[in-house]
Image (cartoon, rainbow over the protein chains, first blue to last red):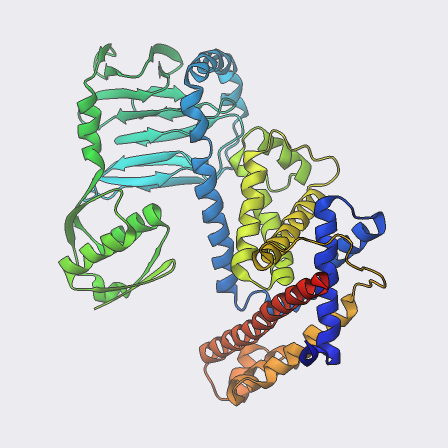
Length: 332
Length: 198
């Protein structure tokens, strides 16, 4: 111990040792008021060298987004634990909340402000399904060629998106903010937290809604058409404005999901970059000029790791992928 | 929405408003991270603590009642977490050693000024260890206040090189300090055990 007893270190160690004693006393609830005050003072005044907190703006942004991503991931999984347990209660609450939002609908139409920034995402034709995370962590699997429009931030009392094409929605439950999908065909779908598929392919003059979990209400403009339960599917004909409700075979939705396989057909590296960024939160760095001629045809399972996908991309293209944390560097 | 006060945003968060939560994150992540980092001198632990704090804010939003300010609430929550972290470092070393509550605390004085000064000394020491070129870039920019463009001109380097040198210099200095902090924590703990065992 004597080796450490030069001035500098001695003071430091005593400090640390006393801190630990105090922390232990605090844990056991035996701190005096004065000791608590000392602990608080110690915490309030850490020695800081400002310039060293972040070595660059890039590092600051990276740390900010690392923490943010981790929070989003933890929050997205948290509510799902209780969903299964309280399913019946939820369903009843959902029915009650539907009535409430029906009566409030008129007000919202007039109070909506037009200043909110809108985001429009279009899945490239070659991609079977593009995952899109909405501001409330709801997940949308968007079919190739389909597009979805939504605000940068949802309002506290409503979540509105506009879909053109086909998409599978997994909506985060939120009783206070009903989730509504508008389509170009005056048909809208309102839910509170559930998963379902909407198919509004242009040209087919038909809208199809298949419900997987939860309750879904289908409206035509402001008139309610029907309420769907899991396993039910509604087909709406845009020509004669008639609709039919029927049971769907679970395989139908499964077939649409392609068993969780993503198909890529002649997609460019920039499209893959968007796909990987949404799925794995990684950034692809490459020289656009160099990689412009590349087009990818492949399919992979949704639950593959990012490295497994990179391996596949490497073996079909010969490009090399250097994976370092959140960044992937691509070279020829 | 950005114009809303903390308390107004917090009330929205209580109603599951994710957008309000985002704004609060943007307002408070940096200060929270900085506080944790300078207490622990460990990026990963600081990131974990901030992450856990915000996850808790969201998950427990219904139970959490902010009585005064959100800033105050976050400060107290961070303090508890930092203290727990230091305790857990301690427990890892302690094994079956029984914490002696009666350990002497007489003459206790928190040496804040001293460690501030000491940190400064170590900081200067780490600057001294930098390679010459890097040290020049660093000193001109950080100590003498020249802009990156001016430093680049003075030393006939490209601005990008100056930026890289600067961020590398900061990284080296910081890891020097981090190293020191780890040693200090370990030494502190050993001495603690030593005192209590006698």
